[in-house]
Amino acid sequence: MLGGSEILHKMKVKAGLAPSGSETGKGKIKMAERKVRHGYYLLKGKSNHPMEDYLVAEYRQVGDNDLGLFAIFDGHLGHDVPDFLQKHLFDNILNEPDFWTNMDSAIKKAYILTDEKILEKAVELGRGGSTSVTAILINGIQLVVANIGDSRAVICKNGEAKQLSVDHEPNSERKYIEEKGGFVSNFPGDVPRVDGQLAVARAFGDRSLKKHLSSEPDIIDEITDENTDFLILASDGLWKVMSNQEAVDAIKDIKDPRAAAKHLADEAVVKKSKDDISCIVVKFE
Image (cartoon, rainbow, N blue to C red; front, side, top):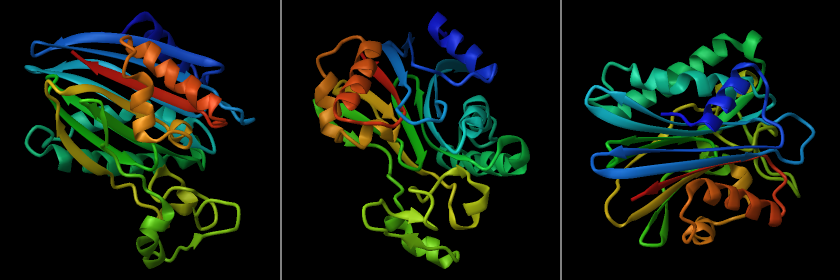
């Protein structure tokens, strides 16, 4: 069930109003005798363009299963693509016929299908794109994380950080990019970029670069247990300035997940992050 802050945030997004300043919210549910709580925080960066980070943090009951649906969408060259993803990606995943029999395959199909829909709507959605990291929590136990780009999921077990996503950097996928006819630039003082433009090798949208980009996600399955403390999902505005373990250490003693998400964003700003920052913290009890 969504809290008031989350409902307000969704209303603003549906009205086409990109967040300014900050947005925050929290929620909780009992899944299979385990209480799950989450909190989120979005903070506008120092760039001149409107906020391009969007997120999902909600719970749904599907049949006899309780699902926690969490996602970070980090847009570039506009907020229309991450807005579209926020509204449609999880529905596309859950509507795949083989979701319950072959979840990894269903998620991959849904990511690719959603990207095709975005490209079909290029006139409406513009030339921009978005990275994505999604986490589906099933009955408080099974966790399925998928991502494209450099938004990241990190789980904490017994105080130790474990990354559950893959950073899709251009250099790491140079072979694929060059086989498709593209190139990776390495200009002095700049990060590697696909065709000299995009700093990630996988993304939704980006019609002008799509023939050199993949929209197929990496997927990692994880079982949460009594040793699992919390999960962090965040855009690269956080990860550019904090390591996985630094992020875990920063909030391990903060009980409220919304306060934890805000603390991470604030710490990133202290560490000179200038990018938009979006963060979700999911606590397991």
